[in-house]
Image 1 (cartoon, rainbow, N blue to C red):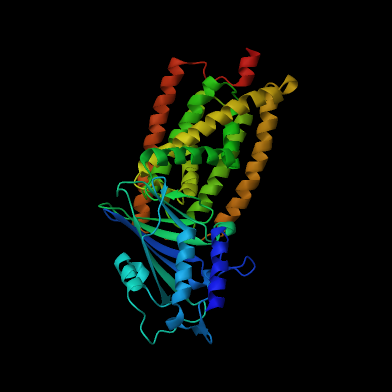
Image 2 (cartoon, rainbow, N blue to C red; image 1 turned 30 degrees about the vertical axis):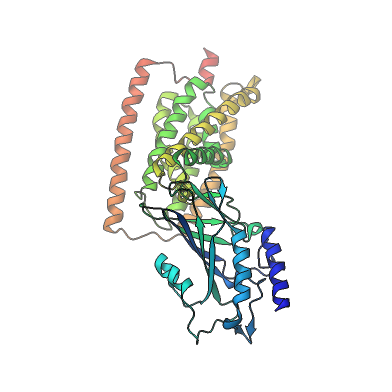
Length: 441
């Protein structure tokens, strides 16, 4: 018994330091934890299932190649203390402390955690006497109860289990607010502290930041913006063009979030190839000759394509929007626009510095656009090969309906853009003159 308690103390030290129960060279095979967080008027119930493969440091007694269930009480108590430290919950900014904690081992075949009530019952009921759980082939089910100040507080959670393994160890959470629909999310040790149902302003700030980070780290989107800037290099001319790009990608991004986009393994590689094609087209248009008024329409249409690309990245983050889906989507777009304006303010003076002397006019536009066109062509070939190897889905009735909706939406967008271009050309006939025309004039 003393040996067991010493091992448990060692394991608790590792947990407190944020280290995983499993060794880095001996990674756990079962790395998915499942949990429910339910809010009651005066308490929070946290029920979590942890694979025993993640608890190798806990001294569960063995009888041969399976656990000695009747002697596991002390080990379960040690595991409860460690998990209470590694799985942290907050009521607003106050760290919660459990008022009660119970635990129970469960075999791999048990399916109680498919439902909250069954999960609660599983932890409370003793195991059948003939239950056999092989070494590291089962679960530890835990029920923590936390007193809370109000069911309307903003609750947040953090896991430090396997934190240095990044996204390897995952915690799937079903959050059940009081009187509201449940929501699901998945976090890892690398996620940090995550709000289970953030206030709208918290979600908004988080997604604005995400939008800025995404546009500044997306090399293909940056090259597309560079293609827009090269022939004009006047902020007054470029802001409407880049805003048209934002409007375009906002339409498809929001449509995708509301399940209006095509689905299937073929679609992401198709969009990646189309994004490369959009960069190539813009670069070639720069070489041939570009007009800002006419560029509004093509930039807005390519924005629709880039929106699908943004949505593919964003889909894993929308789980953190809580009940603020539309606010989060709009905030992400605001972040994209802020990032684009920042890029604009950097690229315009940088190009003015680089494209001087003989490179100041047409020559500079052709050379810089040709370099980008070469990069985009390579991407087109690589991504096109991936797309070619991806099986295309059969044309079912739902797929045809989705395609028809997007064709109608695209046609309306083209018509609206043409009307807008004609109005702008009448209002400001010299707005679209490129750099070389202004230099010659």
